[in-house]
Length: 281
Length: 262
Image: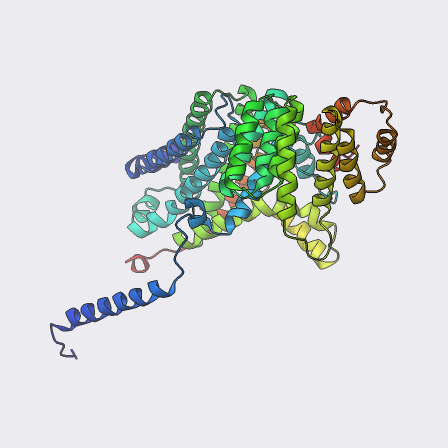
């Protein structure tokens, strides 16, 4: 049996559902938070997941540094052909990308910093690579300037700039960058609970660099002051203690400040890998 | 054999009509154009990321094509009703399965060659290149893996409708590719039933990770041992034959009636 229906019913339904949808949209748009106009497209599209994406690109860069060989994982020996074939097919030697080959790492680091512009580590590692792997200090300066523009309050960027300036012999620029580091560190929020070891290490490094730079510029009293500040953070550092004693007694330390500064800043990519304890040997 | 080849040609003709291959190549070219336009601090000759992402795209696109082409062959014949004149020719069900598989695999392999060619062109434009012999090994193994995927798709489609077979083939192949290489790591903490279950999965499912030479190719590690390549190819052949036999077993006694289709 067919139920009688008005020909106007579909139109009435259409009008009422349209009006209802429009009213809801008006209501919800007033409730939803308005996005910050400064928010970039990446932020808008990815939200907080951009950090995970950035980390993934960063890990990919690490994989490229080791020429596609990932970190070794514990696994059971299944005594199967599959495992033997897998071992034959998948490269497993611990090697590092070197020289021009190290440039292959950079796209991933750039993608990491694009995905999350606040991933300062990605900028720092990029700058480190273009300096040590490609010997392109100009490019490193550009990368660090970009990082500074996007993260003006992060002390790690001027610290890296100071290392770069020391390596290139631009001691005036190094001085200026280290002063900025101290200013930014003094404005850094205090860590809750466990003290931030990296922060302490970086602060001690800043004072040590400043100490050596003051020595080079002929102001030993200022140098002693800086070294003492470094010792206040890590009192067990014997070589600084000895140096302070010598400087206070008006004696010249056996190893020059210049050569010590060079040693401290001439870190290679292999050193970085060893520091992270990635080598089995 | 002639009947198998005739069926293969029919699959090819249908694929040409559907224009899937062009879409895949256009997608690949678009992706490569995006990758090539990415500026890496103005440095030239940095092509590793193009190889890496390009190969990932080749694997994904070829996988999608292999699954979609293989799983639709038999259900499509049933749905259209063309299965009845086909089986009345007479064409045996084994011949039908082999013809459909060969058609799906040869089309996928052809598309694979096109995708690799496009990628090589993109890498060359970025100032990089692939090692020729390693590329040959990678393509051969990749082609063999796709044969396996097609066989799996055909096997599932003998007992399922097209949509169910598509989803199942995607899930099984993805799980095998991602999870099976992790089984030896998982075995460390496993005991008893879990241990047995993991070993069963490890030996039962196809090991797609053995066909993946992307790392060697991208990071210039050179060729894999030829004996291993031959071993993996033999494994692929045996596994494909097993899956096609399973497909035949599932299809040979299956009854069709026009009423079900209409």
